Image (tube, rainbow, N blue to C red; front, side, top):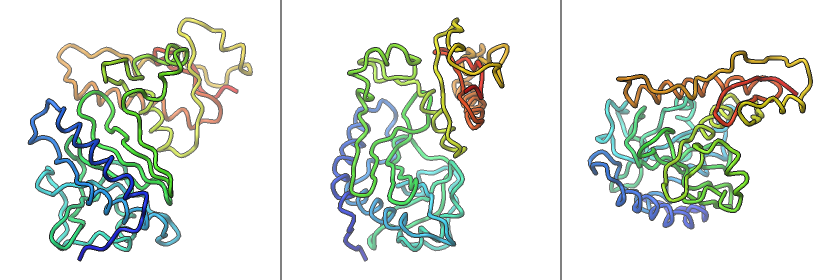
Length: 294
């Protein structure tokens, strides 16, 4: 039995999110069979509604942190299927949350004549699959698998209580900041007109969020030591020679997938050092120079 959603921000967001997925699906050059079907607004609204109310509850004192993927199990390779469908309700999400808190595990959600149900879990999902992440109480992020390039996900919308923020996929918020665009590692920002993004900085930020200890990254010009005039000496943890794992070139014969896995591990190495008290110093070329300076 379908129930009427009561989270008004979900109702506002659903048509715009539906349009985003439809636009990207139509523009994709990939085989349609390899893409998740564009989500319909009514299901987008319903999933967000249930997840929002679940996020405000606690199970054994812990708020849920869940990732929901909207697609049928037939589109998943080796899905984990529950013996019985579980209706998508705040109660069921809360009960299942502890089992799926690890990164990369999604609760699979689909619909039938009676509404939305949870069919199991998925470790891999197709490109352009609607994903809803419950980050913290009242904070939800809509995203999808990236079609190409490095970086797993593209954020589409952020919902926090009664506030809705749609992510500007064209300008990245830096169109009016040419000096900042010029200084930050250029390949990590959208290039004008190309639509291509190297998400090293975003992936580094995701690693920092994962360790939950905060962190400060200082980006400095390559080949210059002037940044050392602004920190306390002696340096606690200089890196000599500089760690260049992020910028290592693809080896001859190395597949794109293996290169991306290598890049992800290298970003994880640098991201781990951001958990140490003090700043993590990298160059515009992503070379790690030091960590821990104040």
